[in-house]
Structures are given as C-alpha cells and as structure tokens.
Length: 323
Ligand code: PMT
Image (cartoon, rainbow, N blue to C red; front, side, top):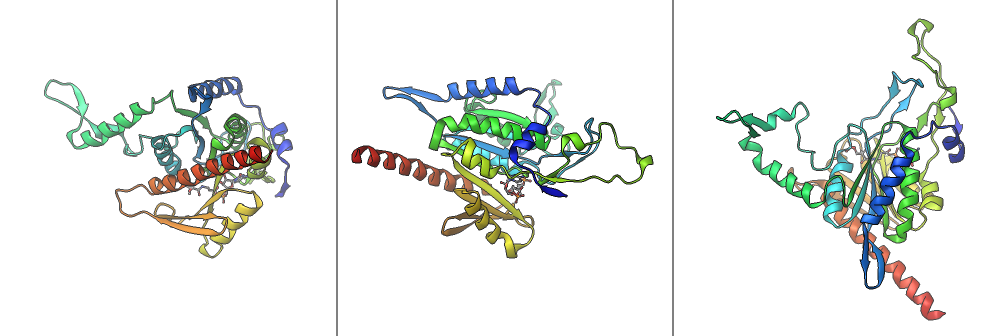
C-alpha cells in the first residue's frame, strides 16, 4: 500500500462522472425549489446532505470484480425520513440498490408478500400490511417524492461518490450555516488508482494477482476547509474495538473540525451510538424494537444545528452593532 494521495491527484486521475451535467442541473433545480421567497428577501430551508451505503473499489476498468463493504444504507434511509419530517430539504447521496427511504419495511425476498389477489381477480395490498403501506404512502406523498424537498443521487464506486460529494458540497455551501452534512456512508479507505488498474478482466491463468492499494484521501478536511466551510458537519466513526472508539471519534472531531462525530461499534450499531461533541459524550439507545434509533439521533442533531444557526446569526448582529 502506498501513502495517502492528495485530493487533487485523486480527482485528476479518477474517471470523470458520466452524468455530471445532469447532476448539476438537478442541484440547481433543487436549490430553486427549496428557496422561500418572503418579504425580507429569499430565504433557504435548512438543507442536509445524507450519505448512505458503501462505496465499491473496482479492480478492473471494465469491472467484473470489486472490493465492497457491509453497509446496507439503512441508517441513511431512516435518517432521511426523519430529516424530512423535521423540515429539512434532503440530498440523499446513496449507493445504487441500497436501502431507500419509505421502503425500509419491504421484505428482503419479495414485495409479492405484500400483495394478494381478491375474489374479482384484482391485485390488492394484503390485509396484514394495509396499515404499514398506508402510512408509508402518506409520508411519501407529503415530501413530494422524487421532487420537492428530496433529491436522490446515486453512486457505486469510490470515484463516483467523491466526485458527487464535491458537487453537492459546493451546492450546499450556498446556504452557509443552514447546510448540514450527515456522512453515514461507509467510504473505502483504500483503492486501486484508475491508471494502474487492469483494463480487462484479470485472468486466473496468470495466478493470484498482485496489486498495490493506495490510500483514499480523507475528504472530511477538504469538505470543512474548502467545499463548505460554514456547514454543520456530522461524520460517523465505525470501529470494532470498543476500547478505541471514543478516542478515535475525538481525534476525528479535532483533526477534521467536525461539529459532531457519531461513534458506533459494528456489534451494536443498530442499538446504540455515542454522540461526541467538543466536551460532551451522549449515548443514545434504542428504547424498543418498534422505535428507530435514527428518530432520536436526528431530533438531537436538528436541535444542535438550530443552535449553531442562531449562534452565528447572533455573532453577525454583534459585529454589525460594534461597527
Ligand atoms: O448502512 P448501515 O448498514 O445501516 O450501517 C450504518 C453504518 C455502520 C455504516 C454507519 O453508522 C457508519 O458508521 N458509517 C461510517 C462508516 C465508516 O466509514 O467509518 P470510518 O471510520 O471508516 O470513517 C469515518 C468518516 O470518515 C466517515 O464519516 C466517512 O464518510 C469519512 N471518510 C472515510 C474514508 C475516506 N477516505 N474519506 C472520508 O471522508
């Protein structure tokens, strides 16, 4: 494995995003839709970018094989629902095929379980699932699914993810402190640079392949310092060893100047997280099996974000008064 690359080299050598122009247009339309025109001028709804699911690392340019990780995207999808409920406009940057907001209850094997055929041979929602489906459709309609306050963007590879994150960050930076990043995606730490990758399928006849992995540059620093310096940034820290979890979260908080780090362990991430801020650690636990842990997490984050916005407005007023 070779040392960490700088972010510019990563972007210069990455295969360019195929639909970059279409994404740019979608972001502009999303911004316009979520601007509120009032007597005082144009105001903007608080906007959050939720990243969700895992990035892949291709091993071949015409990719047959890739390195992947375990993330299902459930945390990102559930969090998106609660952010929308809290009045946020949400950019849901997610792995293709991963868990989707308002569809989390669908069974893994087949949605056919939700349907049956009545006496007149018409397809209908099975009686046992009526309530769940009705509630999801109501929520789905309320947010103007596919338009309105939810924008969905998809990635598969680490190359796509980081290029999209940069575009989204530049766009979210236009709302200043009202912007939030909620970085729940499991992002690859190591990758094969595009120009040193096999062009075609690696042949087994050649024996076990030897390849050098490079370190993916940590984009948290770039996000904070360059792409969206005023945004409220929440990153995640996943570890398997409880002895180092909080210490690593503290390090990320200070090194990357995050506002909050949500720390979780692989063994218990569905049941509890630790919200780490400067000087405080708050454990949030799922209270029962019907409750989403994300409901409590988003409630807490929305409160902290709101304080952050108010704090910066008060600072601005103080400066004006002093002038
Ligand atoms: O999707 P689920 O199955 O519901 O699982 C949810 C989850 C466990 C994946 C989620 O809760 C979580 O912890 N996500 C972050 C996992 C992770 O990649 O942790 P990390 O310690 O490797 O990275 C820490 C932070 O650095 C992350 O916010 C990541 O976005 C960021 N990062 C990582 C690598 C990299 N090269 N650049 C980055 O900016």
